[in-house]
Length: 440
Image 1: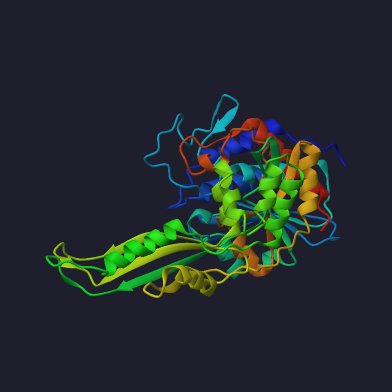
Image 2: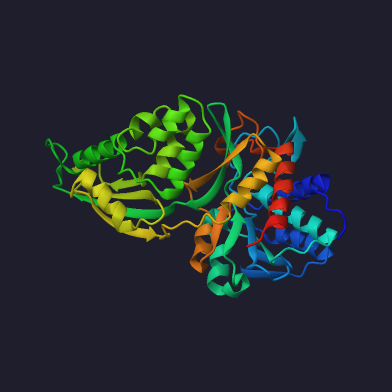
């Protein structure tokens, strides 16, 4: 086997080129970007498959063949990005400009950097002659930003044989540091919440608007929105979340040692959350199912008091919870005036396999001894929910050694999305090491 290197400059050029493809979704237009990736991989001797549900909505599959001693490991990422319309950018969003130690452009964080890390790592290892313990399957996917209909969902439903025997996968969204109390915690995603869209209805007496109306549908609506604004849904402590706070407490100094411990105590959690500063929402979301009312429709004419209000609500469910669970939690707060039904819902299992967590943690700490890896339950959803249908557990592992003060969440989907070039090079190294050290 040749010496293995990391080819940071080449990896940076690959990322730049990925950014320059305007794969805004909708409509996606991933075609040219996929064929660019295909050309890179075929040049290095990879056998590739390009699979499409619709013209220009392509997906690519390849593998670094292994010794078959362990089950395959899946690496996957999406190449579509969100729109840039009405955003004020310092540099053109698809120029891939290097400036001030950053690479700027749409998709640098979500998630072309992750895809480029995977591609660069696979090319480096292929050139070196490295043969992993098991096959490493790589999938470049379309359409994640619009639900995966042409990407992960399509492949899972129509081509499940491509992922035969896969147990674990690496994808978005994790591997980045969170700085709290002078400590550097690397969040490795081990699970994610699931979307549950609800339709709600309020009914009441309609009338001419010249007469006073008390306790009509608008009054009921105001009361319900106020209740949901001022109250949380019930507290739930998952085993993986408890482990996260335990690790954070064990590695923290006072008073954060105490605060993290209190987050695992239902009697003290409210007070503890208030001390979490910018991370309050992150921690609140992993301890509760959540719901936000996002669409309200009522009334046809200004001089008629309506007799009906329709609501659309976006709920996010912790692993193991169902649409029935969250409907019951909401109605316990709001009462029976609000009639709810599930419009779209994806289930997820409650048992989270932490089998790869220690391996991935060691990769981080070997590269950054100050890093303290923690398991994260993501409050948003990714393509992981589709692969979960095949029994595949995704670890969010797109490693980036981000500097303190760089707000990852703030920059994703926003103007001036960018990645520190050093953090991207860190990710190439960590991704390559993850492949080399994978043992099933």
